[in-house]
Length: 247
View 1 (cartoon, helix red, strand yellow):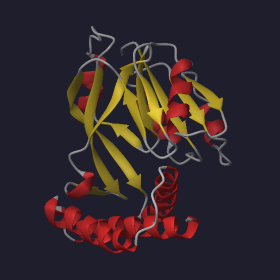
View 2 (cartoon, helix red, strand yellow):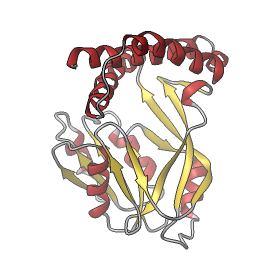
View 3 (cartoon, rainbow, N blue to C red):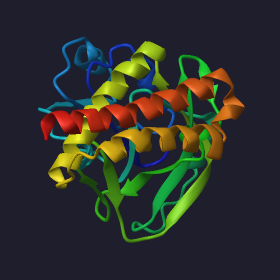
View 4 (tube, rainbow, N blue to C red):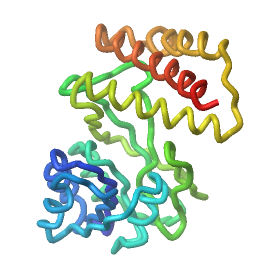
């Protein structure tokens, strides 16, 4: 076990929190839960663990929540995760052997997405690398309510281990989240001064489907890849629909 703290953002994650804590306890004895005022038993469960500290805070976006958690962490090195993410054994081993020689460096790794228990190997959900391990004195999160990104000045060191991302419980869960993401994305477009365009509303969903299913090889996941590509096109369509409604 190394000197690293785990920062977790939660909102009604009672179903995930126990497994999450058990998983990351393999690398740390300091877990910071930044809870966006859950209405289930997330906080109650988290407080039962001695290695967990809970911060209940009104939601101000992903970047603000991750930075708040890092500020309260015991160690300088931070691993930022979500409750539906699990470190693989290989990644746990790698993190436990990191020397952390350069505090300006950040560490990245890739992940495998799931819908229920079905892994998604191809399409737009594959081949994505995320920067999640960093020193809080040299790096921080920035961005809006929807997207956050890590600001840093050093190298990006890629780890070979992956984490498993149990993104959606089922297809209904995916569709529900898609609606929320589409609405937030439309607000972001509006804030940037983008105006509604019927051309973009018509053509962008078509291109998104072709890109995800054909260009990025989503068809190799069979029906699962097809449904994901359709849903991603649906997200783009609804984003412009919401933009039209608020314009």
